Image 1 (cartoon, one colour):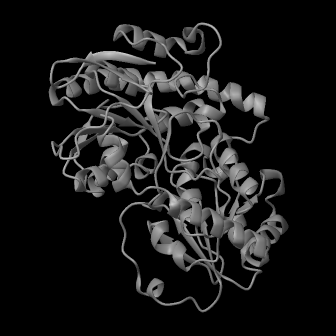
Image 2 (spheres, rainbow, N blue to C red):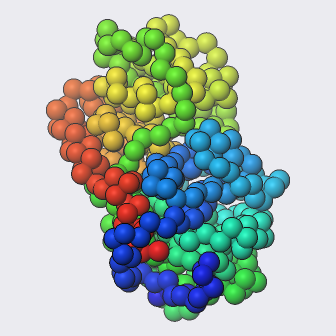
Length: 422
């Protein structure tokens, strides 16, 4: 399955999922790589190691997106291309979806409705990105799986698309079109009207899959099974820049437990869904050192922390977690994979669809505990954290997941693989 288009050479080429001829071993021409993250900084964080791997290999990289993600792009050292001025995907998503623990069927319907919002975001971005790609002439587009604009950009430029996953693939789990899930009947029937209108405007055919490869930093132990054309890559933790404080450079005097709540959950849930005070109160009864790693906005929501709790703002988890024996988090893919890569047992207090999927995948691997909202009272929190700290099987499973991550090809190695395909 593929599409025809014009690359920088002006020749028409077909990009498809089948392996393409290997380029000569001495080929050293730099390629141009356009990254398209979702307009959420933490989604972009998963792309940083690949972006830098391409740069370190001598290739040209641009990262294009809306204003909310551009600061994260610049702080990672990558050149940014603004697009979709005035559109805030997170704010739009927060208006349209209240994140609650719903029955799976109802959650599926709720998330199908979100496809319409993805279409809105794609429509705002498409003009800017297509114009930029027409001028800059990339050789490949690497995009977030929720960036519905990516097939438009890749196909109008006549170059291959690579989906860069950011955790267990929610889009496949929910059967989203374009994710590689087989579609029955006419593929157009699976797409919302807004996306079809956009694709029709740019002459993009509705298909089940647009990707040459699905680039996956999630170990198979945590991933949704059955992914076509999966290209594994080692997850390299990056949670933004930061400075390691002096206390973090010393061994902890007691068993250290991290509590974090991500960066956008409070924006989407609102203050009424902020669970950190309850978590911290529960953990003060345990003989552990508790470090709450919060965003600046969550720090304001917290107020005065319980006695003995250390609160830090904007401290990247990849700096903190090597010193921790466990982590309690909300279920975001960044926390999930960072802890997994470092072999840290996890308790996940997930509250909505993607977080619940992440938590279930983790618990199935034995490397942590899923604590549903109905069980996340003080006693439930204490029992879950005590369990992952004391149970040798959980620690062993976490170590196995870490070992699996370390066995995956490095980003540099995956760059070489993609060089042969584009």
